[in-house]
Amino acid sequence: MCSVGEGFEDEEGSRMEKAASANWKGGKCNKCRENDPVILLRKKDAYCKACFLAGANHKFKALLGKSKLIHPKDRVLIACETGHPTMSLLHLLRSGLDLNTQKKLRFEPVLVYVEDNYHMSIGERQRIIRSINNETSRLKFPLHLVSFADSINRKNVLISQKSLALNRCDQGKVNAMFDQSINKTNRRQLLHIMKRNILLTVAKQLNCKYIFTPELSMDIASSLLTNIALGRGSQVPDDTGFCDGRDSEVKILRPLRNFDMKELAMYNVFHKLEPVSVNPAQIDQYSSVQDLMSYFIIDLQENYPATITTVVKTGDKLALNQSMIAVQCKLCQSAILRNSKGLSSAESTRFSKLTSNELPDHNVSGPERYLKLTEKSDHSPQERQQYCFSCSKLSRHLLEEI
Amino acid sequence: MDIKLEFGGGAELLFDNQKQYKITLENKKTPWLIGDLLFWMKDNLLKDRPELFLQNDSVRPGILVLVNDTDWELMDTVRYEIKPNDSILFISTLHGG
Image 1 (cartoon, rainbow over the protein chains, first blue to last red):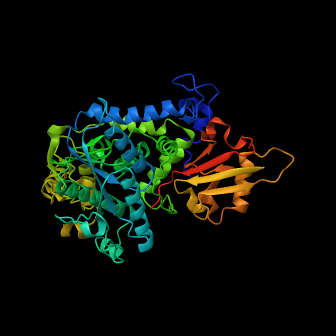
Image 2 (image 1 turned 135 degrees about the vertical axis):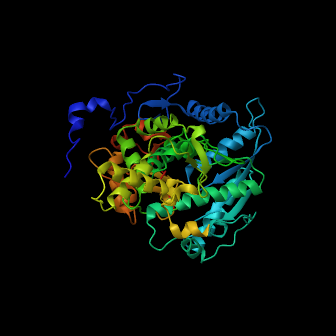
Image 3 (image 1 turned 180 degrees about the horizontal axis):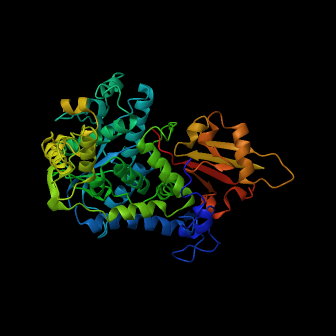
């Protein structure tokens, strides 16, 4: 067993601030210092209801305003999902749109729900669609419905207004996209990319220049680590930053990325909003890299409340050198970088694989053998012309079909 | 002692899809703490999969608890002493799917 790092907590426990139990010592709201607090955030900051709700509203608008991307009358696609974040997002939008002050939101939201619960029973799927429909119409937003299974790799997607034809074969349709042997990690990567591509297609069909997705700080942190683990390091700024600008026409924005789940769940409670919920699935955290990363983040966050912000803020410092971009990956639209002078880690791995598979030719001298090898390496087929490193490893069968 | 239990955000799915319960706790020698209530709920209300609601001596991470509309982290969590007519709300934040 590896024992490196064991016991570091005993010696240097002061390196990370641990908060196993709440640190709150009593008193009034942190902000107004008048009212009794009703919520404790980050296990130490107590707020009264009014200050907490005003703060949440401000945080949402500040991030949108700071980016200066959206102009009045722009159409913005809102990607709806089940759960607390979407519910809060819709309510934040509705209250921003209904304002009569300078701070009024002036863009036009277009709600879309991409139905991808194909692993559930038809009845349960219909219940979810009905509940989403009820909640969105209660907030006076019209909803558009799109079937995930029917939209994969389509240039034109069927968008319905009222109801969606659900089919028992949807799961089969999705499964047919994959190699039978594909592992869960790659499968989830592909589904993530496909969903993104569908949202982009739908946005273009509905004339939206922007897409809002309801990812939280927790999702951002775990997808950041997942991306790095899967060789998608160069995609971190686009995949986890506020703005994903990989598509030339439609930008994907993440307006909730500075919120944590507790804030939004409490926001919903205080506004008496009931999010659309589904039975939580039993997840084996070791079944895929994505599950493991989110388990790691959530578990660490429980005891060290600075975990998520540290990961997210560190990720915010990463950027891509725009002058290095050669082409875009055909599947995920991320940048494929120009060959640099030094070897990238992917190239080094490839070179190492090549040399390890060569039988040494002892008739020539060492330096000559080296020259031969580098020449061979330079001329070996470049797999990465159309796809980025990570996508090229995903599924040969699928890549041939796209 | 009569109290009200409420469930939201999907936590009701673990309790027969019922959002509200009015329950009566029998008098006992020591005060009723929320910690005791959680075990009472496990024995009397929770039908299956208790691991989706409880972990060790508390609720599972991802379930928020409010006592009379106030975060229980401001009230000493499991050590809060329940008073008659308290309303205790459990909100699940677990991602489904």
